[in-house]
Image (cartoon, rainbow, N blue to C red; front, side, top):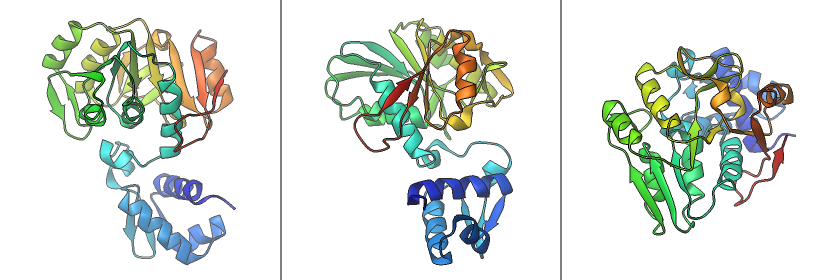
Length: 270
């Protein structure tokens, strides 16, 4: 029998893929009682993963249209994968380094892992990252200016790009909506593309954090070629055939094991 967290993750995927699902269908598919399914759907609804409906659930409007829901809602989605990736990424950061952490959910989990570090400087355009580091007395946090993208709680645009050009860091940790060998790094939100490009120019070590749902997708706006990526940190559910294609381009791939809530993650370098 599936663990509760895994079952709920799969229920969310079924609803997103089909647009809707009934309690009876889900009960039969996952071989649990309808009472259990109703409880799962209530929790998923509270976390912003699905929308409850009479007799079942429907996909959120933003998911049906192909747009991502706001960052606050996405924090709970695929949490075990994002936590594992964040743990593996944190191991790449040494005390005393200067790094950039971009916006997104996995990057927010990464920031949460860094609150106990010593002498670290973190530059960010993400209010979620800044909030996580607000309690870290020994971490210097630098927040760029810019126009706020409300759904992402990130700062983008001309002012952000000017400030980014004035800074150099040892490493950049960036989340990206779509990762593809053929089409590189892409994004569906056009106003953010130039800011992403300015971020990438800050360093020669670009580390991409991407869970398995980001692979093989292509956004409408091109950000950078895959060859600009130094390290790709993903989760254990990413297909090995996908990973090998990135390795063929000289990219170091780290596959984080599933230890969702521990302080360390099992990692596998492939």
